[in-house]
Image (cartoon, rainbow, N blue to C red):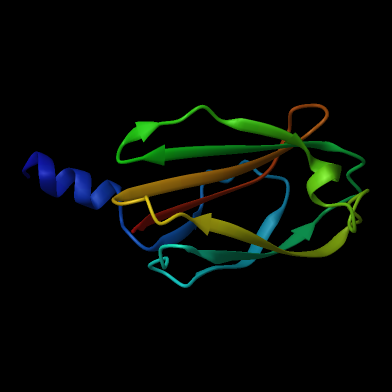
Length: 133
């Protein structure tokens, strides 16, 4: 297999996936990213539905971006800041919708990952979106 074919198989464009490798406490029941591919100058939407096994008081949300195969510095936010209507997160079903901007200047491959952890550093969920603008 050529190097290009191997890279293409690793970086499947236009996909949203669970990147937790089975270690997350939340179970993702549905996920979508639209429009896909993104439209330059417009926002795309990441919608997630998850099953939460027990109440989560607080934690962190880490956002990582790789642009044209170059990793950018991740950002970390307080989970309750980004989910003010859901904090503390209650056991049961959690539905979230996030808006993702795609600026006119972007061109190429974009991979972004959202990782949530509780205050004990347990992984709550991990979602990765691979797309191209």
